[in-house]
Image (cartoon, rainbow, N blue to C red; front, side, top):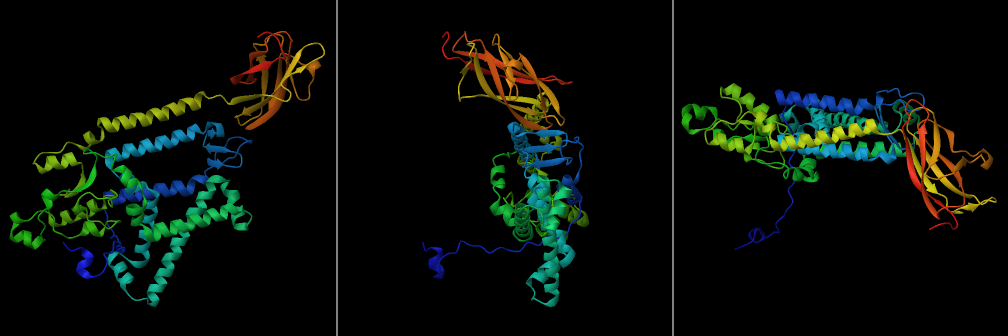
Length: 485
């Protein structure tokens, strides 16, 4: 059998040029829902850095702040320290489980409504309609010659693209520094170079991905559609064309002449015209479908005009599709949503969230780390007593100064002091001030009788002297030159 290149005399090309996608304007419940989601997500993204939150005089007043300089993460009343990064890991796990939950219930709804690529692409497509007109006008302009009008429209449109993209990058850096201060420094040229580089990179990526690549990101670049297929099953809600009802297709006039020969689909192609990725949902489930349901709005509108029932294209599971095709009645959507798999995902998601809230409420705001000094390991004093030294790191995670008590236990006869003190001032416990929201280092000296084991475990403890006396402790070794084994 001859190969394709043998038939034409030229090698077969595996490259397919991109076909322009010009979604048509549509109205309906799903389109209005997309409007609402876009408004909420953009408001959250652009507005969150400007929300103030009073934490007192010793902490920043920005509600959400990733303070890399001081290694802090603030989210309203919650403050995460570097050693508490497992909370951030918990949030990421919750996000992952949440995506599993949404995908198993309603397919690629995340992609269709809340994905940043979808939100910004949708925003840019509305800019297209504002400047170039609706679908037919955009196609005529794209295929037409470069006239003065076309150049002017492209200039205005790309300027709006760049403005949106620039503010996207500008809003991102506001999460990493005080927003009003950084804005002033940015426009005065006093901000750090990394701020300008970050804004430039995000401006370029938003401009290119949202303005030009668009559906290619969803179909070719993003790995998520391929991962999602492993999380969906026959009970996941998908945007489905009910071919058993719509086929064979025929125009209204043909159907009027022979009503029993044609299905409900009048082959108007409105479902294709409104699709933001340019697919034909009538060809069945495909990777280009982001489950935005705009084709449902378009089809329902056409069905209303021709006097046929809605739902030719609708959210439907594969199981329900088989039931309806056999002439049965599909169960209510609530039974599809509240099934064992989704309930398990929801239970897991909720359990992780409740566990994090519980640990946040129970965590102590005072932390202690102890390291035994090694140079020298011990010092024998003139009266035979042995002195060891330790480096303490005391972490005060409260947004106020505190005074703490440091004590030892499990080492009979032990006395202690810190830098600036002496053996004459040594005692069984001592008090030490800690600055607000800080880590304080101190060198602790512990002296104990020379008689005893060569290595003896004992405990160094710290507790706050205020309304929250909870503290921390660590077991460490006390070394002697000889002693009992």
